[in-house]
Image (cartoon, rainbow, N blue to C red):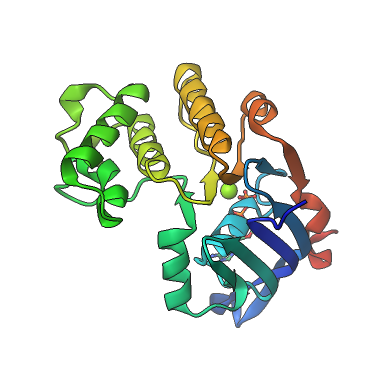
Length: 236
Ligand SMILES: Nc1ncnc2c1ncn2[C@@H]1O[C@H](COP(=O)(O)OP(=O)(O)O)[C@@H](O)[C@H]1O
Ligand SMILES: [Mg+2]
């Protein structure tokens, strides 16, 4: 098989608790897996297992304690676990997108502009970018009267749908999804499942977390049992 877009190997993570005299809490030990273009790999495990921590390390928000997070796509051959901040920012622009659990709201920016922004930042014309944003917002059931309003006042589920539209609007080789359907009804979950299938069709590699077993069953090509890599200190 050809080279994976993402290869995680011998990855360890512990947190230093500065408020508890620097106590170390080990979370993950010896994690390894690969994600190829055109497949959806799902991190499986109970709450607190370390799933979100894995996505945050891949995106470069959390520093790995040791190990490797290799990205291979669009001319990038880098190890996020050992990359400098500029390389991580370049990888976010060109290689990987991340749909976090919550939308970070910027005051006074309309929902339409929030969704269109990742395209505009990468050089798409405003009219084209906002028309793509409008299409995604309507597919996700956000009524047109809300598009010109800032999402800060939206309900949790509406904010999450704006967040999903923003995360899906650009095509990048790797897409990280942290419980994108957690606050959605089944109709909107279905739209997200379709959007995932369309990305996979276009060759995107997806690494995701899905709390809903039915959604997980539909989208997952493979499951990574995160609990198999729980650090020994936590197994008691
Ligand atoms: N910034 C942090 N500082 C200290 N501990 C953390 C931090 N982030 C996560 N953890 C701990 O790491 C473990 C895994 O958390 P998380 O990755 O959020 O789990 P999951 O997403 O599988 O529910 C938990 O015990 C959590 O408390
Ligand atoms: Mg989580």
